[in-house]
Amino acid sequence: MTGGQYSPTTPTGAKSKTTVYGNIDAPFDLCQLAQAAGATYVARSTVYHVQMLTDQITKGLQHKGFSVIEAMSSCPTLFGRLNKLGGPAEMLQHFKDQSIMLAQARKLQPEEIAGKLVLGTFVNRTDRPEYAAQYEQLKKAAERQADV
Image (tube, rainbow, N blue to C red; front, side, top):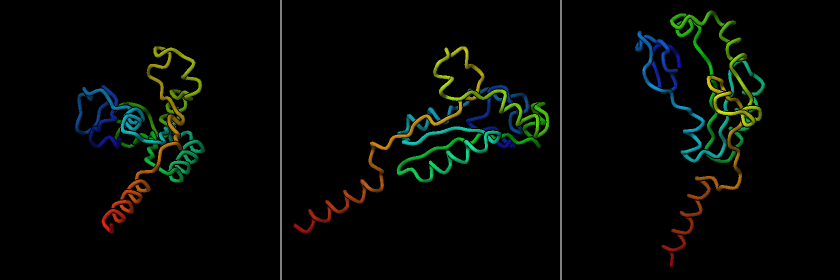
């Protein structure tokens, strides 16, 4: 989210140029949405957690299948100013303070992780054939059928 206009991921109550009194919608959890849509690689990190994010992007690009990597970042120029979150350093500190790793979050109750950013790899399935490969097989089978 840039802060210029709100998006489906804008936190409830957050201000932007198009939600000057605060966003009234509940934000999407992109990782849950991607899982529900059938993604076979789903991960989330923040710009504070640079090495984790770099690794996730690399794995997502190498993954054969539908990959989604949510890279959490805030705009210090507009979003930070409108929501009184401080400058770039304070916003990075916020990502550090509000983040919890998936392995740790799985050991806690939902109320214990409320308001936290859960980071990690949520899905990494290799047991499902990649869509384009399946489509190629289907085309070849259809061509063989047509030749008969």
